[in-house]
Image 1: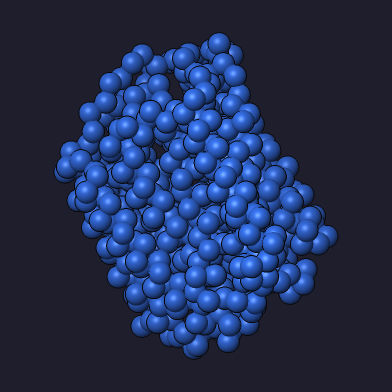
Image 2: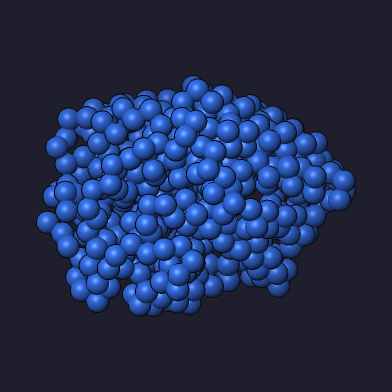
Length: 482
């Protein structure tokens, strides 16, 4: 099958399938954050438990998303995407049936494995399926239409929570996943890379997982155990050493899932550094904002979820245009201006405290932050994927997703510590209020740093790329692999 044009029936089906598949993971993360106070009460979870409910998923996702991209390049992006969706659905079923917080965390880790298989596949399929001149539009539309999931997620999650069931937040993923699998099988073409590595990079997978896991455990345990606790010191040391070993292994391995040479591309490296800074800030915002609205400002769960609706509606309405703008004027301007606008929104968010009125305190901050994200996300993603040759579509997507997920993972572990959490509870207003305010200020600083990096490293025009022949095959035939 030849590459398709944006706006054609074939293009719309591909885009819809990828949007729905990606939305499974996106909606799940937003509504889980919304449900944290309820889960804490019903399962008697402490602050560290709440962090691990979020980070268990993020850890396995960040550790394995590069592997997911590599597997898609080798065995077929559609096949691996469908496998990830099915895995995600089964893990969601286990989450919904979890009798205690320990099993819920374990099920969230399994969910992350499914997310690691489906997430890079969605972007790689878009990159490989659309003609070159329409890819920025397709990615922008994917970002914007994903806003439908962002808009419906808090509404649906808040409604289910009002009915008293956080478990339904996970169980609803099962029928949605079945629909995505059927749609992908019928409408999405298979694509692969004939030059993909022949062996799975087991040492790379293990060292990246141990490294991120060690750092996450150490920073999460630090507030309650103290920096001198042997377990904290050991886990942080293991994390640092494992990540150093990961870099060495990837630099020397002939079948590495992360070819270090791709970072010689200035635009690719710059885009991923911006991604790390921006998504670290996003991780802090989306973890603590809905908690703060419920615990400190006194909003019901449904109202707290709906408070973020304008942000997702803005991305839905404007992301495709932002992608087209970045393609027309170059990515540097929107990638520099977007984080600065986000930083202004975060400064406004830092003032949301007890009894904060929605229309004058919450809404303006959410709108400003949403405008910044809308301007930034599509050009950022298009630059990260477009800086490398088409043969690296899965790797580029996997790297960018891994960077974003690792940033969010470390943010949830580190930012409450940096903001002075100590041994307090995130579901107590007296503890959460100062932690939230300081975290928003730190996140604003991360956004400013991201803007500076974009200005210094991102080209004024979209990077030129070589486009070797792609490997396409009919949806009904098996993928090409070697």
